[in-house]
Length: 250
Ligand code: MN
Image (cartoon, rainbow, N blue to C red; front, side, top):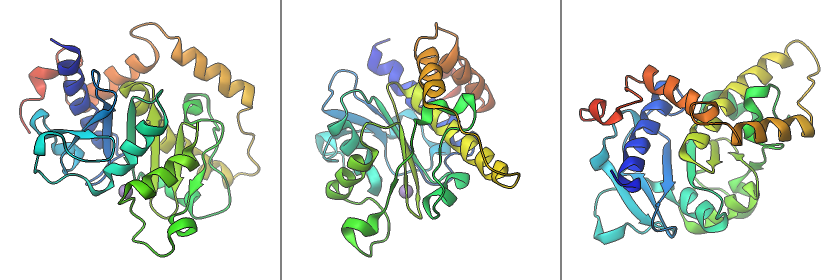
């Protein structure tokens, strides 16, 4: 099995995990950079993540043009993915969602920041991009490379960023890291919202965030991102040791 073949299976698994963990509902999407063509990325046609199978995966140029004249309907907001891959050579996966606990932090003044150890991969700061700033009244969707690049500039070198009144986007150096961060961005937001009802919050320090991030990045096979991937795969009804066997049917 080639690296590209394995990655296609993993991309389908990632879609199922994001659906079963409630990060994506009918909307939201996950991509990976093409393993052999860094100037391309892989992303499903426009479809709910729960329903995606391998044949739904399309290949795109970084500017969002489907490769090979593929005429299937793509996600409108695919420009989020290409804009980040274009700006950040270190990024190999991007996830956009509207996971609910995150949204309040995009429309109020309190910044979303790591409050618990498992959530350190969301980054030190989680900036908020506001379409209004550069584009005035829009439908809030990132529907062009111009908007995508504006968002990527706000994300800058970070791990995650919010879109005001809309949702969030996270990156990963790998697909598994991106899925981990997408799940724990939602967890962090929920815990931060709950903690606010009790009083002032003690956030993780910058040093704590750095140490947790490097521990996860240096973890051995089966630990860290792999361990959560196996757990979430099983919850999504997929055998993590043989995903292909459980991915055939929609
Ligand atoms: Mn969206």
